[in-house]
Length: 355
Image 1: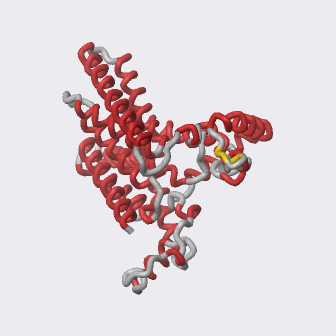
Image 2: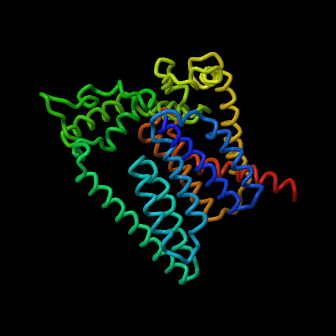
Image 3: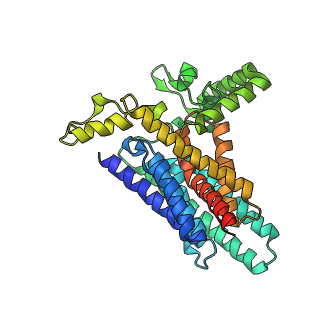
């Protein structure tokens, strides 16, 4: 229950941050559009009810976008250090957050190459150095704590590497763990857990076999299937996950009340009113996607900020296409960029009609 409340607060805080970005960029009208999209797409999702890192990642990526938008051109370098700190924490929670960092660095390099002002270039270099200082200091601190804490055993040689998730991404849905070889999925041999180094050759062999079996046309069809799975569901994977069942409900006065049962009838996948709820969520998602279509149809000149969001969207799709995909909840970490670009699309459409 406490974790659900924390998740709800994180999602709500993320929505507030995105709304503030809209107001800072274009004023009250864009802020209203951002709030409406955020509220209906993620604010009414039951994602906060389960123990996954998606809500907290949504908050951190919203915070990153807020810092990039509001403090990129401020003279105080401390905010770039804070961005580095937030990047590092968010990256440790979910690796794909690195896409936000890559997008920002690409835009910084673009400015360094094409900006005519030497002073601006010098400032950008200083800010970039401070950014990476924040990243480095935070990662060193987190790793030091992880290796010296006494709560649980921590050894990185047993962690899964990128090749595992590439192999997983090559399964039928892009996220079907059961299709991986048993020795990779359960890496225990003679009572000992195999290290990532010991598993590397097995992963490479399995990846090569899958690619060979697919062939060129098969890989194209497979990528199309993965893309469909992680972008088609307006419930952001809630239907697929189906993590909540009646038998796991903690009995309290509220959960046993009439309203408690009614709420579960709507948001529990196997309850009677969930299909109608799923249709509503699909309509919300279609509304957001149409905003993206409008954005890329209408835009001509883009700001550096918009360029960062565009690269996040592109990088997110490429990342999920290459690695593990198959679940639309993986889009939650990229929702800040998606919602902001979609909202700008509706804003520009409205502005062009008014002019």
